[in-house]
Image (cartoon, rainbow, N blue to C red):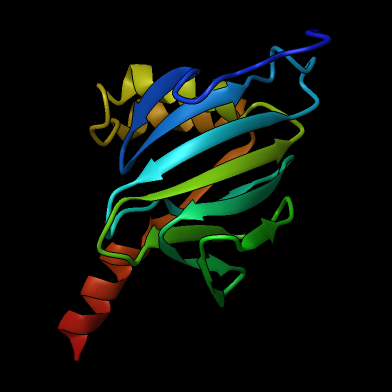
Length: 162
């Protein structure tokens, strides 16, 4: 476990996943698994699929942009300076609803999400949608459940149904 760490602006391990670029600022490896801190850059209209973490709480601090979160069906709108929390076991997702890329700091307790993203990048070929047969064992390994499509996809489907 690291006893002190300085991660300068622009420093950290960059990971490209579907719909975002993540920079690991403090890895689970640095904290003995206690937590991880990630900086995420999310393009407009992008965000993760609806999912849950069985073993981790997740906290976001919005640095730049406007986001819509959904936590257990509750819509939460957040912008620069706001903080959003989702407890372990809650179904959650978010979408950048602004016209510019958004940026958030995410803390996950306990750590492990950074390690999930590292492995996801390997099976998702630098940001492409991963093969479900490769994603399923990875999700199981990190107690992560995929529950539905991203908000943008769900919104497009709902708009088409009108």
